[in-house]
Image (cartoon, rainbow, N blue to C red):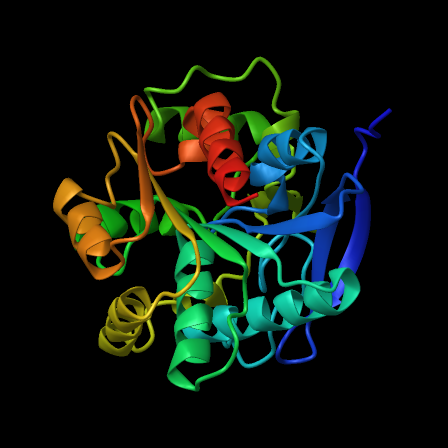
Length: 294
């Protein structure tokens, strides 16, 4: 019988930083899942359980500066830094399982994975991953939509919230299309109680406002993503939220022109946080894609 409680473990990132992950299942094939900016590994818990039920080992990772993973001295949070961490995790899993892992990356996680794979192709190295799933992210993104997402994330980053319920009110206002959960336990995993009694998001404010924030080298990041898509050699799946505020239809079409072998699924009724909006459809799309690879 499959154990539903994951095993927590750690990996080492490119800066010697500690990356905390949860391992689901005991399958011979492995996938690791990288959340979006401002999220934690728990955002992918439902999909990881579905993968484990299908016979995979699934590992969800808190990326640098997020969740229970280390905040980075010096504030190194460019996408290239996240990509370097993804390479380290892939190398550790390849060594353990004897084959490269599938990577599933949402937004920031997808950007990091795509750039990591592109760097391998650029350097004429073997693929880092056996397949890649990009969750509502493409080489180009809607800058206005990205600004709205950043605005919400930064809105209370310093001030925080007086209670978890106050944070839940803010999330409900930002995501009016999503039914409000009956419990705040899931939200609690994305918050940290500080000594002043305020609850703040579980990520390093330097992610946006530090010396090397996520916005660093924007043009170089975009160029690297475009080239990575153009040289993509592994099976690929793009899962777009049908009502995404970040990935427009033309962005998806461009990616499919750059990587014509890639599969594409449009999830109706989902916005940028696809797994949170329609996790059943999202997980089924990934399982179907992986089954075709077998």
